[in-house]
Amino acid sequence: LAILFFILTPIIYAFIMMFFKVDLLSGDRTFIGFGNFEKILSDPKFWAAFHNTGRYVLFVVPIQTIIAMILAALINSKVKFSRVFLSIMFVPTLTSSAAMTLIFMWLFNNNGLIVNLIQSITGEKISFITNPDLALTVIMIMNIFSTIPHFMIVFLSGLQDIPDSLYEAASIDGAGKVKQFLHITVPQLMPVTFYVVTMGVIGCFQIFDQAFILSNGTGGPQNSTLTFTLYIYQLAFTNYDMGRATTLAFVLGLIIFIVTFVINKIMKADQING
Image 1 (tube, helix red, strand yellow):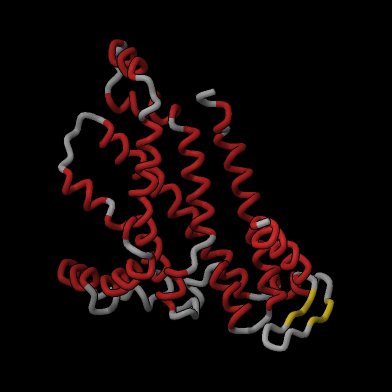
Image 2 (image 1 turned 90 degrees about the horizontal axis):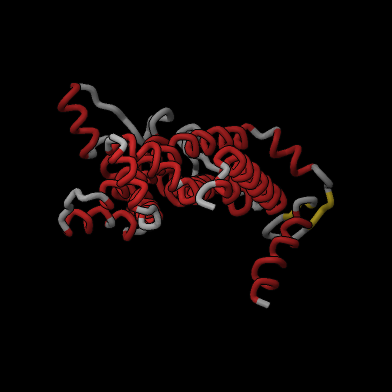
C-alpha cells in the first residue's frame, strides 16, 4: 500500500500530466500532446542544463571513484593511520549538504580563503562564484570532497572479500604493490566499482541543493550552474508550469536509465567475481 500510494500513483499521475499544460496555481489543464517536449527541446535553458549536468557527471564520477578506491586500498593495507585522521576524513559525510555549500561559498567568494591564497601566490585575483567558467567547478570540488568518504567505506567493505591468497601468489611471482593493485584489486572490485559509479552517476544527475544555494535559485551566473533538477524546480515553482516540469523529470529519468545501462554493458560487472 505504501508503494502504491507514495510511489506508483505519483509516477502514473506525473506521466499523465506530461501531455497537458498544467497551471500549478489555478489547476487548469489543457491537453497539448507532445507540446511540452517541443517546448523543452527548443528552450536554451534545457541545453544549458544538459551541458552543465553532463560535464558535472563526467568530471565528478571518475575522480571520486578513483580517489575513494585508492584511499580504501591504503587504509586496508598495513599503512598506519591515526584515529584522529580517520575521524577527520568522515566529517564531510556527516556535514549537511547545505552547510557544506555555505562553507565552500565562504572559501571561494571574492574575499574567501582560497581566492586570497591564490592571489598571494600568483598575484592574480580569481573570481570563482561570479565567473561562469568556474562557478560549476566549485560545486564539483565540493561534491568530490563530500562523497569520497562514503564511497571509500563501500570499497573498503569490498576489499575484505578479496582472498589474501591472491596477493600472496602475486607476491611470490614478483608482483609489486602497484601491479597487485592494478591486476588484482581493481578487477576484483569491479562489481563494487559498478555500484559506486552507478550511485555516483545518479547522485550527480540529481544535483540540486548545492546549485540552488550557490546561485540563489537562478542557476547563474549565465546559467552556468543550472542543472536538470534546478531547472525542474524553476519550471514547477517559478513558472508554475507543472506539465513541462514533469516532462523534464521523465526525460531526466530516461537519461539516467540509458547511462546506467551503458555503464553496465561497458563494465560487465555481473561477469566478474561470479
